[in-house]
Amino acid sequence: MVRFDQVRRGAEDAVLRSLSFALAPGSFHMLTGLRGVGKTSLLRLICLADAPTQGVVQVFGRDVATLSPKDASFTRRRIGSVLYPLVFVDHLTVWDNVALPPRVTGRRLADYGAEVAAVLKWLGLAKLADARPQALSVAERHRLAIARAVVNRPEILLVDEPDTELDAAEAQRALKLVGEIHAAGATVVMACRDEAFAAASGQPVIRLLEGRATVIEADGR
Image 1: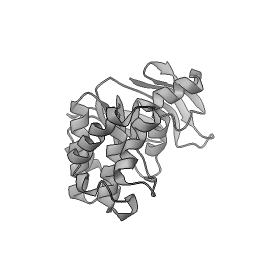
Image 2: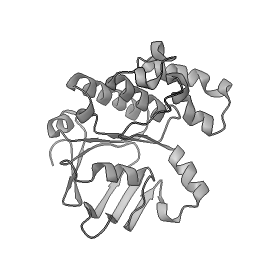
Image 3: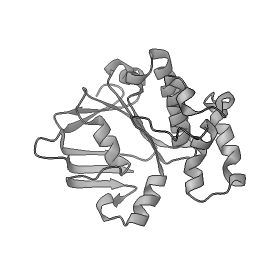
């Protein structure tokens, strides 16, 4: 599903260098490491928000450097991401922000309206459908970002450090919600700074250190 081969992002002193690992379809990994170690940079490479300086990044079996603009756009639509800072269209309602991904793909309201309503209900945002994003709490904004990321049923879901933005209870709620998306078939990578939070998830861990990745299975091997 995702493969990095000797990937560098940035100059010679880049935080990501000689980075190699692979993610199987339907897997769920926690991504850990100290602040500034490159977790967000790694996620941005997966979702094609950035390009590697050196090495090869493959997503869905294709080298992202060889994708045409049209193919790259289609690939991005298969990936949902919750990356900081969370950016919404503040003059649109919560409902319309969630509806943006299916709308920009050209789908008709009759085809996606029920899906938007269902996602908002699942995430406890149905009563806030007519509110503006700036009126939401931090936790509600995070759930709104998840709703927008998953409304198109992505094959890959990337979530960046909910444990640093949310209190412990809301971070656990985010983990549970993402786990449900994974159970439905998505490949998931969730970055976090708290090693205990990662361990408690029961999922294998990708640990970043000095530009390299170590994969640690859930049983500690």
